[in-house]
Length: 134
Image (cartoon, rainbow, N blue to C red; front, side):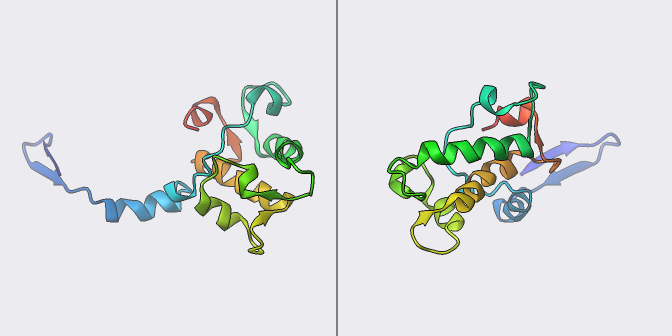
Protein backbone atom coordinates (compact mmCIF):
# COMPACT_ATOMS: atom_id res chain seq x y z
CA UNK A 1 0.00 0.00 0.00
CA UNK A 2 1.33 3.43 -0.97
CA UNK A 3 0.06 6.65 0.61
CA UNK A 4 0.98 10.02 -0.87
CA UNK A 5 -0.15 13.56 -0.35
CA UNK A 6 -1.29 15.04 -3.64
CA UNK A 7 -0.76 18.58 -4.92
CA UNK A 8 -3.89 19.86 -3.16
CA UNK A 9 -3.19 18.21 0.19
CA UNK A 10 -5.41 15.18 -0.40
CA UNK A 11 -4.10 11.82 0.73
CA UNK A 12 -4.03 9.30 -2.05
CA UNK A 13 -3.78 5.64 -1.14
CA UNK A 14 -2.93 3.05 -3.75
CA UNK A 15 -3.18 -0.60 -2.85
CA UNK A 16 -1.13 -2.86 -5.03
CA UNK A 17 -2.25 -6.42 -5.32
CA UNK A 18 -0.23 -9.09 -7.09
CA UNK A 19 -3.50 -10.70 -8.17
CA UNK A 20 -4.53 -7.46 -9.86
CA UNK A 21 -1.16 -6.86 -11.52
CA UNK A 22 -0.46 -10.40 -12.78
CA UNK A 23 -3.06 -10.43 -15.61
CA UNK A 24 -1.67 -7.15 -16.97
CA UNK A 25 1.86 -8.49 -16.72
CA UNK A 26 0.85 -11.63 -18.60
CA UNK A 27 -1.07 -9.67 -21.23
CA UNK A 28 2.13 -7.81 -22.07
CA UNK A 29 3.91 -11.08 -22.80
CA UNK A 30 5.70 -10.89 -19.48
CA UNK A 31 4.41 -14.12 -17.96
CA UNK A 32 7.30 -15.15 -15.69
CA UNK A 33 6.33 -18.81 -16.04
CA UNK A 34 7.12 -18.62 -19.75
CA UNK A 35 10.64 -17.28 -19.50
CA UNK A 36 12.59 -19.91 -21.36
CA UNK A 37 15.64 -19.82 -19.11
CA UNK A 38 17.78 -20.06 -22.24
CA UNK A 39 20.75 -17.74 -22.67
CA UNK A 40 20.39 -14.68 -24.87
CA UNK A 41 21.31 -14.93 -28.51
CA UNK A 42 24.63 -13.41 -29.51
CA UNK A 43 23.95 -9.82 -30.54
CA UNK A 44 27.06 -9.80 -32.71
CA UNK A 45 25.90 -12.87 -34.65
CA UNK A 46 22.24 -11.81 -34.79
CA UNK A 47 22.42 -8.10 -35.65
CA UNK A 48 22.97 -8.56 -39.38
CA UNK A 49 22.62 -4.89 -40.35
CA UNK A 50 24.83 -3.79 -37.41
CA UNK A 51 22.40 -1.10 -36.22
CA UNK A 52 22.57 -2.21 -32.56
CA UNK A 53 18.98 -3.53 -32.57
CA UNK A 54 17.58 -6.99 -33.22
CA UNK A 55 14.66 -7.10 -35.64
CA UNK A 56 12.23 -10.00 -35.65
CA UNK A 57 13.65 -11.04 -39.03
CA UNK A 58 17.27 -11.02 -37.81
CA UNK A 59 16.27 -12.94 -34.70
CA UNK A 60 14.42 -15.60 -36.72
CA UNK A 61 17.39 -16.04 -39.06
CA UNK A 62 19.67 -16.60 -36.07
CA UNK A 63 17.25 -19.15 -34.61
CA UNK A 64 17.46 -21.19 -37.80
CA UNK A 65 21.19 -21.70 -37.29
CA UNK A 66 20.85 -22.12 -33.51
CA UNK A 67 18.53 -25.06 -34.07
CA UNK A 68 21.33 -26.99 -35.77
CA UNK A 69 23.77 -26.07 -32.98
CA UNK A 70 21.34 -27.22 -30.28
CA UNK A 71 20.41 -30.48 -32.05
CA UNK A 72 23.35 -32.31 -30.50
CA UNK A 73 22.51 -35.78 -31.84
CA UNK A 74 21.50 -34.49 -35.31
CA UNK A 75 18.09 -36.16 -35.32
CA UNK A 76 16.25 -32.98 -36.45
CA UNK A 77 14.64 -32.62 -33.02
CA UNK A 78 15.68 -31.04 -29.77
CA UNK A 79 14.94 -33.05 -26.65
CA UNK A 80 14.70 -31.30 -23.31
CA UNK A 81 18.07 -32.71 -22.25
CA UNK A 82 19.68 -30.89 -25.20
CA UNK A 83 18.57 -27.62 -23.55
CA UNK A 84 19.78 -28.05 -19.96
CA UNK A 85 18.73 -24.61 -18.69
CA UNK A 86 15.28 -24.54 -20.30
CA UNK A 87 12.19 -23.78 -18.24
CA UNK A 88 10.10 -26.98 -18.40
CA UNK A 89 6.78 -25.05 -18.61
CA UNK A 90 7.97 -23.03 -21.59
CA UNK A 91 9.35 -26.17 -23.26
CA UNK A 92 6.02 -27.98 -22.85
CA UNK A 93 4.10 -24.97 -24.19
CA UNK A 94 6.30 -24.91 -27.31
CA UNK A 95 5.94 -28.68 -27.83
CA UNK A 96 2.66 -28.31 -29.74
CA UNK A 97 2.42 -31.98 -30.78
CA UNK A 98 3.28 -33.23 -27.26
CA UNK A 99 5.96 -35.66 -28.44
CA UNK A 100 8.47 -34.43 -25.80
CA UNK A 101 10.84 -33.03 -28.40
CA UNK A 102 10.93 -29.87 -30.48
CA UNK A 103 11.10 -29.75 -34.24
CA UNK A 104 12.58 -26.61 -35.82
CA UNK A 105 9.25 -24.76 -35.87
CA UNK A 106 8.59 -25.58 -32.21
CA UNK A 107 12.12 -24.54 -31.22
CA UNK A 108 11.61 -21.20 -32.93
CA UNK A 109 8.30 -20.81 -31.09
CA UNK A 110 10.11 -21.52 -27.81
CA UNK A 111 12.73 -18.87 -28.51
CA UNK A 112 10.02 -16.44 -29.65
CA UNK A 113 8.73 -16.45 -26.07
CA UNK A 114 11.84 -14.53 -25.02
CA UNK A 115 11.53 -12.10 -27.93
CA UNK A 116 7.87 -11.40 -27.15
CA UNK A 117 8.60 -11.07 -23.43
CA UNK A 118 11.30 -8.47 -24.09
CA UNK A 119 9.55 -6.59 -26.91
CA UNK A 120 7.22 -4.75 -24.54
CA UNK A 121 6.11 -2.16 -27.12
CA UNK A 122 5.44 -4.95 -29.64
CA UNK A 123 7.21 -3.21 -32.53
CA UNK A 124 9.08 -6.41 -33.51
CA UNK A 125 12.45 -4.86 -32.70
CA UNK A 126 14.57 -5.43 -29.62
CA UNK A 127 16.48 -2.29 -28.68
CA UNK A 128 19.54 -2.39 -26.40
CA UNK A 129 17.51 -1.41 -23.31
CA UNK A 130 15.11 -4.31 -24.00
CA UNK A 131 17.90 -6.80 -24.71
CA UNK A 132 19.57 -5.79 -21.45
CA UNK A 133 16.54 -7.17 -19.53
CA UNK A 134 17.21 -10.69 -20.86
